[in-house]
Image (cartoon, rainbow, N blue to C red):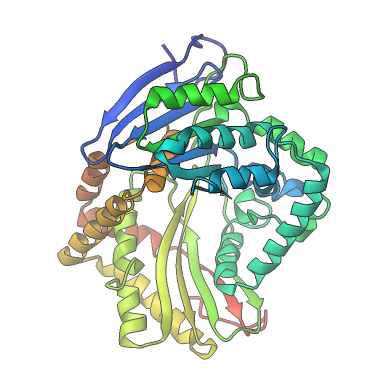
Length: 451
């Protein structure tokens, strides 16, 4: 028997262990196999689909980096597509595109994903290509220099997008530069420029290990064939290792220390000002996350939300205004974004703060509760209409929670949210001191409403 989440060598199986997780009426049959190396394979067989999404998820992200190596996870994400002993960079892209498929990758603060989407008949090719690039990348020194330039251009391009930059600023305001959660996923020019091939390769081999990897696959597939294909693709390589337990999900641990509420202003000659009010919130293991999701939809989750109706529809002060919540293993933050004319920033901030205070003090109506729950359930179910979303759900359940709630279980958790639960979350969260991030034609010394 495999004991999930433990370390050490006890009870490690000599053979792969497979079990059926669910036969979801709103999905397909979900099966999970743990290879002796500790690598996990989880699939959802959906016979009605003609496509398959294949993802290799590594439980390593930017928060696992030291300050001098800030951005190494994202750098590595670029480099793994540059070639292996078996394939050149051109081969990797051309082989998938020749069958009409697509490949891509992304890095977050807590994990990195490499994925391909292909026709069901081309799944064996996707397995071979994606396993090869994740396990066997060469990291050629010439490619390191080429991608260094690409990443520096990407960082510069991001700086030219104030609507994106303001979200990085609010995270920095909340967590500070000294905590990995407060740093840019991409790193900075100061960290990327001196980073060496040796440092990147060392990070690759230390952190990309079989126990830290989940391979998730969704679509028209046969689980046993997927497992055989993956084992064959990894055979004899760096991920075909001695028996080990799968890594446990990232633990909640002690709460991350956050900064006192503060204001960060980035002067930029833009036609529009971009602002985010934000504060620390709950982590992803907190049972209140369902109530927070409903509250977020009521406050700023759509065109019927309070913020949208008050600031855009009634007053025409902003084209875009919304709220959101981000959650990590041991922390989280909540934010409200608005983009408006620079001369309207003070008025918009006053209105946002008034809506936060009103919700915290007066709570929600029964009609808002019903609508907020409906929005939460609808967005979740509608998000499962493609194999890519289903693949992501499998991987996140396994990698982040060490558990996979069925669609029915998730919908039931949302339906169980009460008005009192939403009101308690709102009263606690929305009365916290708020940090403010501003990007626009202002001076760093300009003052903005703080209450």
